[in-house]
Amino acid sequence: MTQTAGFPTTFNDFLGNSSAVEHLRTAIAAGRLPHSLILAGPSGAGKYTLALMLAMAVECERQPRDLWSNGQSLASFCGVCHNCTRIASAANLEDEVDKAVAAREELRETDKKDTRVLVQPHPDVLIIPPDPPQLLIKLGQVRTVIQRSHYLPSEAPKKTFILTAASFMKEAANSLLKVLEEPPATVHIIILAENPGELLPTIRSRCATVRLGALPVEEIEMLLADRRPDVPAKQRTLIARLAQGAAGKALGFDLAAYTAARADALLLLRNAASDPDHTALFKMTETYRAGAEGQQKTTALLRSLSLLLEDLLLLGAGTPELIRNTDLRPELDRLSQTLSFQWIEGAARGLDQVYSGLRRNLLRSLSLDAFAGQLALSAR
Picture 1 (tube, one colour):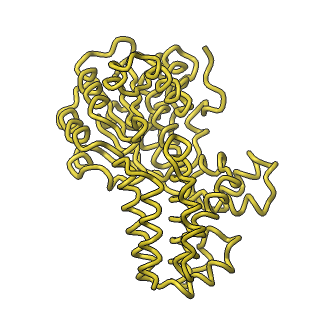
Picture 2: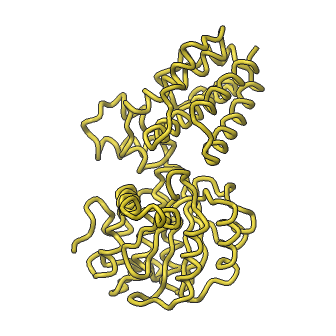
Picture 3: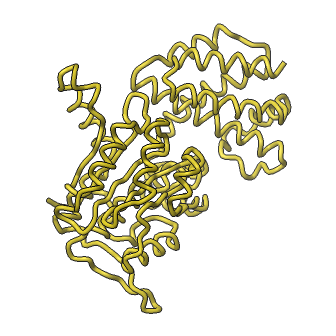
């Protein structure tokens, strides 16, 4: 088996945040990698890729080392041993989750309910994604982590558990505390979080946190010019801003899908800023129905709306050079003249409530209708 195509072959291939990465590599080489670690950063910053690379550095059969200029040892991975190749095989998390969900669908109805989605590329490495359809990490998944953490590794030096999101069911979060309080010496637990504030304070206090910062827009533009030369220069500039400093997000950015979602988000804002046209609004929200496609569509809408609200705040603060949706500058200027700071702040809070409702599996179209109505009323 060879390493997965597109996956970094060395730590030098990881884009950005070199200081944070070197700190983690030094800790592994010295045997001091925290047993409980939060990797925090925006979507597309490379949290999952880095977590797999750290797992490979911990579990690699050859344990190669690089040296800093000061002689300090940095952990690395060979990328070709049996442990490395199996861990790297899970690089495409979406595909692995789809396979796990498909396998669950093949089970008898009585077994489906008790079967949680888990990805295990290696006997001593377990990846725990949010469980569809609610996309929350559930109690059964955490119980599996706890149970397996009590067994010694079978083929590698350590057991590594990667929880790929910070969205936990309450019971699951409370249960995770049990293993975080006294993690076995042979266990590393890595939690990936876009917003660490989603995690219980008691979880955060028991973990070391490493933050992956945003890359400068200019650096992402250069990366796009190198890796995606087919994208026109004007679009590269726009994508570099919309990627919010995340290299991975920029490289995989679907501008057509984003602009489609943004058109619906603009309809919400226009509806609030002028005389409401509920006919057009409800026609739009009707398209956000149940199922995986509706869920992806809703997430894209909410993310684009969040960026538009952020741009309106930046215009109101007198910093137009920082806005992301640069191609919409004239319309954003008009909206910023109509919508007050208090309204935008209230809209951002309402957006958080929609996210919360979706986690509780409320009907998407009804949640969006209620949110849109709330925006229109508060703008009057």
